[in-house]
Amino acid sequence: MNEKKIITSKQKPKTATILPSEESKKVANTMWGGRFKDSPDVLMENINASIDFDQRLYIQDITASIAHCKMLVDQKILDTSAGKSIINGLKEIKNEIDKGSFEFKKSLEDIHLNIEGRLAEKIGDDAGRLHTARSRNDQVATDFKLWVRDAIDTLDEELKNFQTAILDQAEKNAGTIMPGFTHLQAAQPITVGHHLLAYVEMLGRDRGRLRDARARLNESPLGSAALAGTSFPINREQTARELGFDRPSANSMDAVSDRDFALEFLSTASITALHLSRLGEEIVIWCSAQFDFARLSDAFSTGSSIMPQKRNPDGAELVRGKSGRIIASLINLITVIKGLPMAYSKDLQEDKEPVFEAADSLSISIAVMTAMLKDMEFNVQNLKKAAESGFTTATDLADWMVRVLNIPFRKAHNIAGQMVSIAEEKGCRLDELSLAEMKAVEPKFTNDVFSVLGVEESVTSRNSFGGTAPQNVKNAIKKARERFL
Ligand code: ARG
Image 1: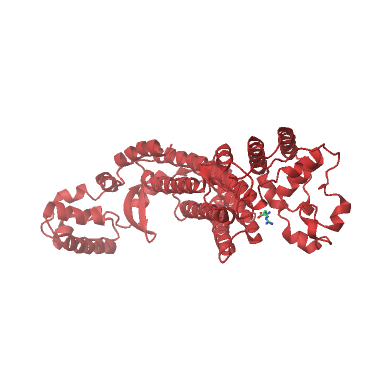
Image 2: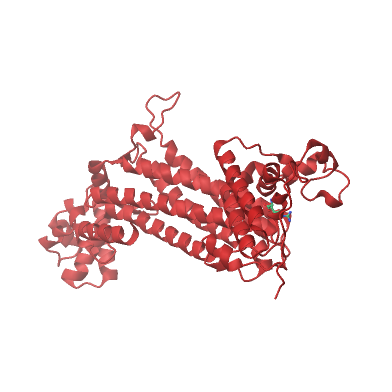
């Protein structure tokens, strides 16, 4: 067992010794420059500083510092009065940053040292006691995990709203008929509701992946210190609990160098971005004059500065385009981490920007898609007309032969193919062929065949579980609301 080492708070000097004054800056970095004679080259300062982007971690950094400080006091590693002044100082700093009055300094590298530097300005030397039994390595891993965990929770909520918007549209269009495509060729009639529900499933899996990532992420690195743990009698269970983690991480070296949670977040974000991009692509197609399946509201269409007739779906295109950034962020961080020896290396500082970039891009993409879809109008008549062209009930015709005439499916397929070819030559739909013309191909045909050739009959008949029939869609919407909302 470790003997408890007690650091007592001395009298507070007015100016802290680690305060980064201009004078001391010229000599060496005030936070770690004890063994240095010279200050860092300005180039070194530029490449080393992360404050421009990691200031986004300030709430997490202060929250984790307060948890750490409370634990140090409870463990009698730090005396109560120093603990109090540290915690008060940190709370004041949070207010300053909230208000925008905090001055971020590049010379102090990152958010951790900026906050500690400011704490020293405010409370003096006791500020230097906060870093007892921790390192920036476990500190940044903890902060970043807390940030990613918040981002997961926000995204989950945003995806849920998106699912709600899709479900509402699906409900409105449960019986609206459109052509279903394979190879972007009219395949079989489907319902718009059914098509939209496909995206509700995709987003449901995305949310599941976020949940999985969150569960695996939720171990606290705090207390792993630089890499090997600490000789102070800390209580990692306490800080883990205080910060909402399920438990402390089991291995200090893993904890300070693990960024799996960021990679999992980025992989999930990439898959979600693919889903949004596919929907973006469909909206672009649907809103083209050639398809004319749907119309975006004025609020989500843009005009052309030269072609007055244009209503461009820029929002959908930008969402499709943003997927590039999000996927690039995953490739970025995967590449950074490949080949890093244990434990911490400064390469890991490059972990934040791709995650912020992906989270921001995904968040605005979801918001735009949600709003766009909410007031998108489907062109019901045009969709039906499109569903009726392209011989989309040819499968129904073959199925009818199997069911009613007991013809093996392969043969029925061939007969239906011959009928499609006749209709194509005549320039008519399948249901516009006469019974005589059909009998010429297969004498067993009866008038009953016309009961399966309409697109309405076709979609209504596809009532197998997970199929497109309007009644199925209505049931599926009800179940989806229970499953996801
Ligand atoms: N700004 C650093 C980062 O984001 C914090 C950790 C620095 N650790 C160190 N050993 N220099 O990774």
